[in-house]
Image (cartoon, rainbow, N blue to C red; front, top):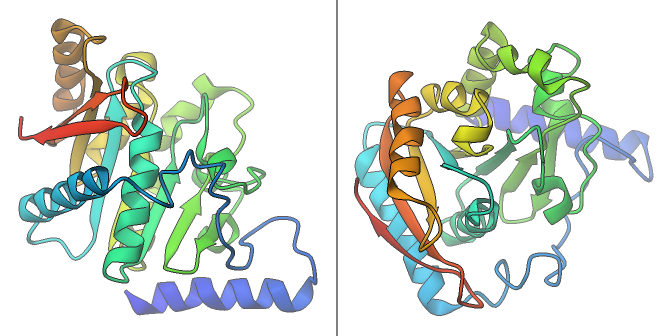
Length: 255
């Protein structure tokens, strides 16, 4: 695992040596603006933090045989709070035990992670999958504690780009990141709004479904789950997101 990770660090150092002010690629380590992350990445509510740690323990118990855990976070429909919970979970992982965490924004229709972490989106996962970039070119080092980010990149035509998620390049991507990180976390579009999400799920070790309590109907959730299971995606559980609270409170339960 360390060889690929060291190569990424070496590539970053080389960029910083050649360019005093890098405009793209993998920027130097920096701190995240607390105002940009709605207070979730700093000053996190203790109950929320404990719930995230419980989520980590459950994921690890479900994937005991894995050196790297690749987990897809998704929802049946949009607006469930998926990206907020995922980014907070990644932060908890990165500061808890010094593990190397990679966030991957596969929500190519409405990418958000580059805005949340204030990095450019010139090159991302879509550029890698279409052969326009390699891994060191698309990885942003956004936290000194070991949190990295691959943004979505720009797709001129999302429908044309969608098949690249089921390709040899996707297999290669999974192999490369598995050698460099302990956790690879995918932010994906809502299942019923993006046919590529079940495909991405089939490459992962497990799927977490975020559900907004009191909003999403049970039959809608079941339809989304069936679409993922049809492509052999493996559900680990659901997160019930109670968005009426200032800090989202959720209950984790096994499906």
